[in-house]
Image (cartoon, rainbow over all chains, first blue to last red; front, side):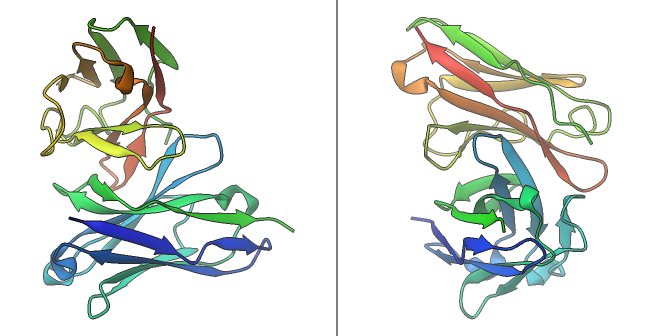
Length: 120
Length: 110
């Protein structure tokens, strides 16, 4: 069974940084493409970005609101996905989900999410 | 880029069928067959119900089906059940190599 467990959320001041982690199990992590998706309180889903597996180059794609501020990376030896978030803004406040990618873009399996609150 | 357009709410009685539409543009829904649909119950993580317009992941009921015509995709739920009451989101990749979601549709089972 695929399991994804996010961690690292919390309260951070505007302009600050935070790194989220996502531990995967139950699948071959190194072969998996991965997404981050977020959901602001009471709002809809918003795609954050995608990281391909290293075998196909390990390249990333990002949503416009986070491009240049957020970085997605992976440590396949630890079966862990990361989301480094810099220059955080109040509008980045959301629950952040990591997901596996199915068929290039769809988010197949989801973690339970971790809450990030950006506030002074 | 604006979100895909979904109705804010739909409703139906048990046993009925409902359809949720998702309208985009030639740069997203109309460009590729990479439309997916997600179900989200309150306080839970979303669940993938349909991918690549009409494919069901293993374990998803065949009461759920997807289709697309031009810039509009649709999710149909047949034989409506109380447990289908949830929020539903459509999603598409774009010609900019990004992903865009719809605003979500609240399904009420009367």
